[in-house]
Amino acid sequence: MLPGFGGTAEQPILVALEKALATRGLSSLRAALPQGRPSPGLEREVDLARTLVESDAAIVACAGRSFGGRVLARLAIERPPRALLLLGYPVRSQAGERRLEDESVLARLSCPTLIVQGARDPLGPIRTFSRLAATNRSLRLEVIPGATHSFGRGERRAIATAAEWLTGVLAPTAGPASPGA
Image 1: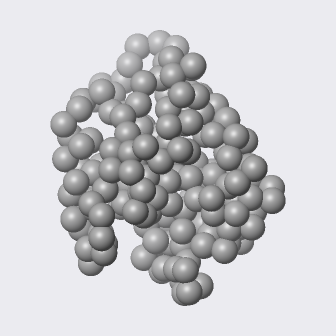
Image 2 (image 1 turned 90 degrees about the vertical axis):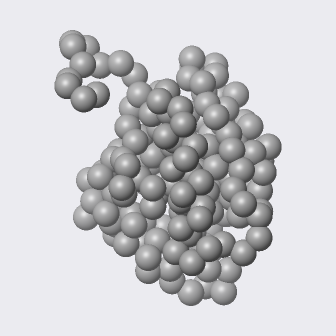
């Protein structure tokens, strides 16, 4: 799990998600991203995430909060996990400018991806995600009513939704595993 911009591995929403996953029998790993100005195209941050994922064969799903989600979505294009969770994915800058590359990344994802978004998040307009989810079957959108980018009072619902979805996607399926699984 990667935090939002400037956040640490101790970001409260990630700690709460880790606890929710643990009650469902899923373990998790929280990590931090480099502080300071992001690299162009987020290359440095994606390289760090790649190193983390490749260092532990047990990692089967990725979860990112805001900026962390931007990084993990880019990594998922080249190395799709079994599941990708994006909590408050920002397709707009603080100034309200569209981040076309972030929209393009979502459009190209091939792994099961849940976007948990606050209904009132100015960085992630619901109409943008609805349009993308309508054209990419890998995307699922869950809107938290009344919530903004930080979820606020909707955080518990966001975490419960995320934990339930991850548990369902990662649950063992009946029958033998397919080759390469």
